[in-house]
Length: 291
Image (cartoon, rainbow, N blue to C red; front, side, top):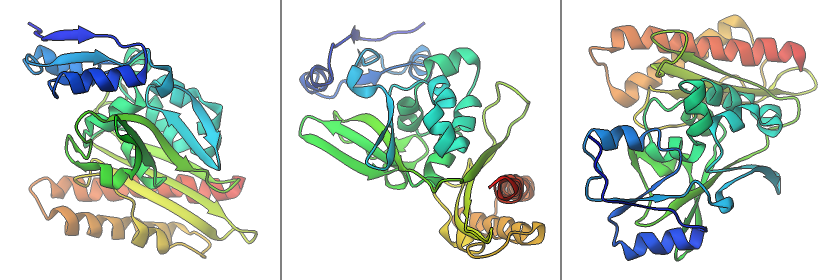
């Protein structure tokens, strides 16, 4: 049985922030509710008031601002998936949003909620980390931005300050002609929580050498992170299948360095290398042909 202390629906962002302050922290912002309501049914939030932010226009919209793509926190996964701007600049993020849960979840769940929940298996975290995305935050004392890697502290832990709300996510537009993809490994083909995922984006120079590579793994590290050392292995090179395999294996070694060798590593290490290799192949070899 779900037990929640109260439910309030403010009409603007400032009202939502003030309500949270008035409730002395015994409140929780909720938008799509796809994670919150499941937890509430399990007995959480019985002492908290839910503040419904789903109507706040300040948190909506997908737009370009000063060379950045800004995605409002209330953007549903289906909106991110279908956004022409996201698909043109970071197809891997659109693909990740399109792989979240069921159509009902994608229509209801939000990008801001996915990031705020900070599940290690969240589909959107890997492409956002690869893009070096920043989280745009709003509190009563003003706005601030935090790199995604600094915002997500670990499984279900973030750097949100008391009363703060995620306002939007933003990333710099990659170079024109970039190619990207998202590869996900789950227990089944649909409605699957990600067990492993990889996001890769590449751009090329006039000689079709790799000019830029952005890479991140999902459900591998304790928190989302880009892999600059592995990215650098291919910069300035004409990609080959063998070199891509070497980069994927280097990612595997980085994973073991970060989390140690565990009972699950016998499966997870070769699986993560294979997922990384597949994503890099699609972004680098297939993308290079169409660049």
